[in-house]
Amino acid sequence: MLRVFVKKFSNDEKTFAEEYYGYNTSKRQSLSGGTAHISIVDEHGDALAITSTINTYFGSMIVGAQTGIIYNNEMDDFSIANKINYHGFSASPNNYIGPGKRPVSSQSPLIIVDKQGNIRQVLGASGGMKIPTSVAQVALLNLLFDKNIKESIDHPRIHHHLSPNEIIFEETFDQNILNELRRRGHKTTCTSYGGSVVQGIEWRLQEKQYWANCDIRKGGNPYGY
Image (cartoon, rainbow, N blue to C red; front, side, top):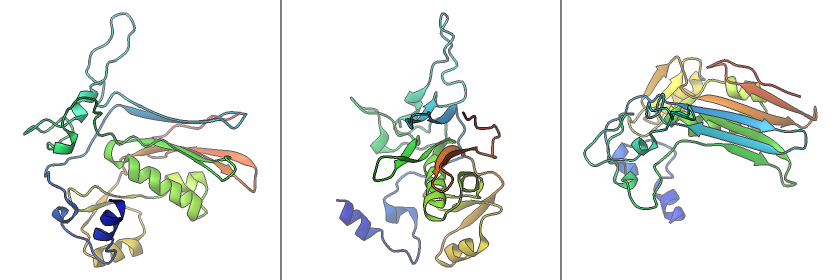
């Protein structure tokens, strides 16, 4: 099945309309929510990439009387026929509520190890639909383009969510890449904010140190030992 999918959609020379990729809903708008991520490596080399969410800001807006815990509203991540959810998503049959099902989520905690099992990266992000593409870009910049973790996280980003059928890019993104994408038929839209906040740790082979960074898009500082 994967080979058939790759063969059908492996044209790198041009882009197509949403229908070509099997997309069948129409309405999207920008997301906001109550998600947080933390990346941890301890003194023994054990790693954690933890993404937690209550879905939207303040979740269900109900607080436990005894615990003080804010309850989530994750059920809103499911699709309901003929209804647009809190985030502006139109109903998708693949995401209808059903027995034993979990709603679609963008959470993408990531731990990368080498062949010996040693930690190379610990990554994750908050920021709704832009989480997967943000984490992927940071990982690739760090592993394949030899940028350190700060350079990789702070680097301008690009995002495509199929619908709307356009590329969203941060205003300082490489214009040569954007021009090539436009040549291949992509529509592009500039934004001043990447919309996803990445927290990451890398192991620096030459320095034999862990380096960490908190995304400049939100602020904060890493803590070390």
